[in-house]
Amino acid sequence: MNRKNKWIIYGIGLSLLLAGCMDNASGNGVDEMQDHSDRLVSVQEYNGEGFSLKNGQENDKIAEANRDEVEQAVKDFFLQQYKTEVEIHNIVGNVDGASVFVESIGKPHFHTYAVVPLDAKEKKIMADQVYSLEGEVENAITSGVYGLMYEEEFNELDEVLKEITRDYHYTGETTQAIHNTKSFGFGNEYYFVSFFDMELSEQIVELYLENPDLTKEELQDLNVEKLSPESINITIQLFKNKEDSNPTKEELDEIAKVIEEAEGLPYGAYNLLLHDNLIDEVSGSGDKDTTVERADPNYIMKD
Image 1 (tube, rainbow, N blue to C red):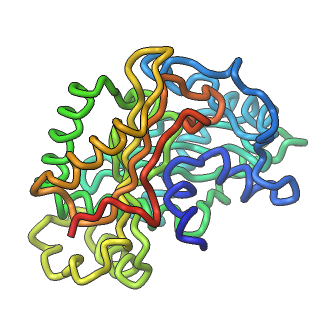
Image 2 (image 1 turned 60 degrees about the vertical axis):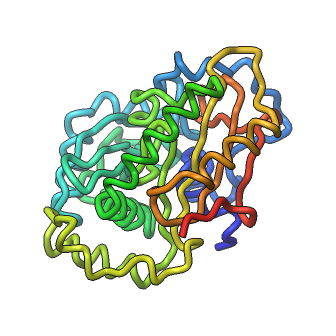
């Protein structure tokens, strides 16, 4: 996978990822030439309502009519396959079934999803065939474990970003929007973490499956900092807190400098995206022509 696109695919592009993987003949399912200005809402008001996946309308109705069965099938899947209890946040129809967005209960903490296939003709849930896209849950677990390993450092990052949003008049996404539209692993209203060293990721997942109640002390031998910082991406997304206000290159440079100079932040390579106040209610994305960014290969490095 091209590194330039990895952090976008793992964290932001839920509709792109799911539509693309489930409907390969149709590309990524997004018509970039179409004007979607009528779908834009203020980020402070967006709670994920309206979020949808390509060609999923009919399956969405079937899944909702069988919601209890869908939820139980997904909870069983995560317990059996990943020894993880999850909370169900949203069920969204896709071309092949229903994508179910979940949050792990307790620590390590992460957001991810699973797919429940449906028989549209019979309007039937195929509860014994629940699956996830290859590497999706594993990446979420790995980033969640990383968040636990560097818990104090992420708390410091939270404080730095709260100060930035206050000083530069930005905000993050709502908790409801994250629950209902994101599968980015470990993260919050300001950022998410993606892990790209497959060898260490496999080691972390193996440890997690042996003991899902891992403590920070049990993870000390992993020696994550032997990796290149580019193996761990921390993608920060901030939105202007008022409508009709656009981010500027000057703000981008100043905020990047604050992050560069901050001490005690998590090890990794940081992408920084600044959006205006609006978010697409269907795709859940804030990316548009007004967005300014500092990203791969021009990371903000913390090593």
